[in-house]
Length: 342
Image (cartoon, rainbow, N blue to C red; front, side):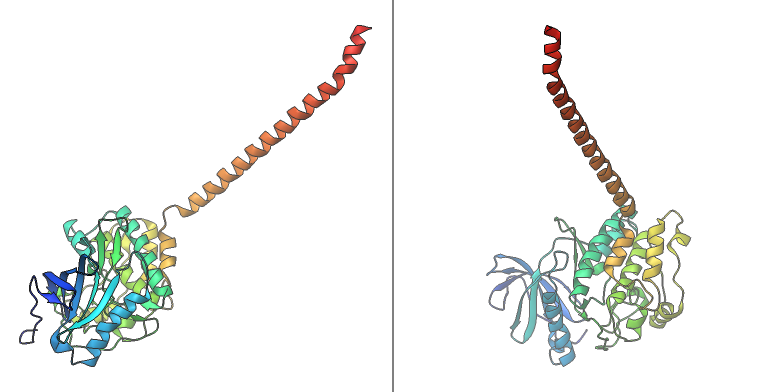
């Protein structure tokens, strides 16, 4: 990126008429993200802009605007909300909600590389709910990774970010730039604008159409990492990751740590199947496999319901018996009383 024109934003600068820059959060391969005050909504927003040298490339601009279109196609509390799309002096930008919290990759680092099983289970169920909503709308994320999962300090708990390379179900990836991949940043680098090597499913490496099972594969890698502290596939270079994802059998969770739950071991194994048609097919299916003691609770509910119904029937029967007994005594009493007076 050296030598390329940069976005010269600074605190206090007004952008697009209604936004005042607070501070720059960071710059990536395609754009800059800043925090700005929205003078119309009267609240802080995140503002994402496309780097100037990319505005002349039709693919880059299309990819940038697609992020907005995709985000608007899905409405779900656990998917980031977008607000506005604009242009300022030739710089394209859009705004989205400003979230305060911690990205999952930062949480993993802070916790020594892995999380408690119960926390992983709770987070997974929320992620699956959000992914299922996206998939139902025909949207596939295609770059699911810990840095795109934000843990927030509000009732939502978790928000999925960055649909920048997302597409609609069944579309394939096209290369948009040379790969910035290096062994040093293999956990976070985006490979040729196509995804992130550690988390990419085989079909994405081969530029084949992606569907919900593609996101399920990436989520399987994330869960494996969150529970064991390591990724199922590693490599020193781009081709090493390519070969690992396409040809190496994934390790089993309980082979690394036998104390980890069997349901996670089986579910993640189904997520990491090479052939997407044989893989776990939906986020809903993954959530059902990991819901705690669901079958036991259902059985318990049936038993409790049966006991309550049985008790009610017994009480009704007893009431009928008492009523019938009382009526019989009342009917017999006149005859008994007259016989006693003779």
